[in-house]
Amino acid sequence: MTSDTLTKSTLATHLPQVHEPRNAGMALDMDLVLAVQANTSAIERRCATLPGRRSVKKEYQAAWLLKAITMIDLTTLSGDDTAGRVRRLCAKAAQPVRADILDALGMGPITTGAVCVYHDMVETAVAALDGTGIPVAAVSTGFPAGLSPFHLRIKEIEESVKAGAKEIDIVISRRHVLTGNWQALYDEMCAFRAACGEAHVKAILATGELGSLRNVARASYVCMMAGADFIKTSTGKESVNATLPVSLTMIRAIRDYQARTGFRVGYKPAGGISKAKDSLTYLALIKEELGDHWLSPHLFRFGASSLLNDIERQLEHYVTGNYSASWRHAMA
Ligand SMILES: O=C[C@H](O)COP(=O)(O)O
Image (cartoon, rainbow, N blue to C red; front, side, top):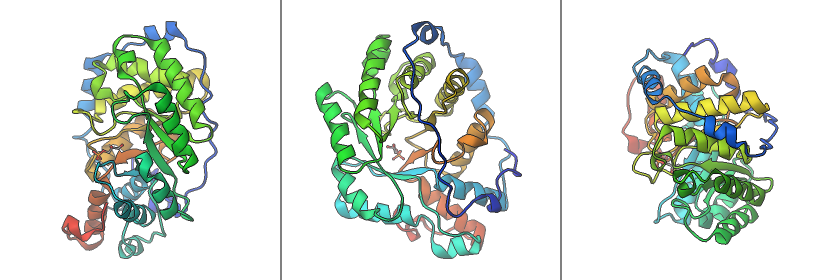
């Protein structure tokens, strides 16, 4: 990662609204899908070099971490979620870094990319975020397993959109991938996209349950062909969630899809990303494989419940020279 492309001055305090044409999708091209391969050992070799590399330091690191915050879907997806917890999370999304730290960094206000909740909490989050411009993302379609009746999965999307969700994170039927039923996956994804209407749809592949990187690559293509605005690795509930090899596989599918169609599809690694250092590795990977254009909330998000906390601690360390206990930072 070079440090010249992102400095504090390039971090506008209010991010410009980038107009990106939505992925219109294309007809299912089975020849293309079946031609997709993934060279697992080459992918793993490339990824093994990433975390150990020299990373950006000092003010450049602080700038990248601030940038990372603007691309977090701040998430709570727990059975014991309450309206109070969701309101606190929304307050954190609207002011993700303490004002004194931002002041010391010479930064104006920033926000996270979105707040991500279950359907039941959408209305609460929408009300709590009123006036902030922060969208609410709802996980949907029988999250996390995606095994509820199909008509109910469609209905769930419609209800979340009606409740004010601007982004819908759907889960695909893993069995369609595992049985190679690409037509069924394509049809399902088209129906989910149609039910979302104007809301943007993120397709969660649940990569930890897809068996191989080749399946991950093929599922990525099929979901993009069916109109996914983003492809997302995981629900956070699988035993293996976001990994670098899976990310490289999906990112290269995105790159190839853009070369073929001209549409830029977003990428969201999710699940188990909780360290500031890991966020820098992901951003470096995006920069190298997709380019600077993708380093923006409209094309890249972290799905994370606890990453923000660690980033805020690192920023405090940069400003004061001391690490604070994580409990000193408001819920993240
Ligand atoms: O989509 C977001 C994930 O569920 C968050 O996972 P995490 O709690 O491991 O950060």
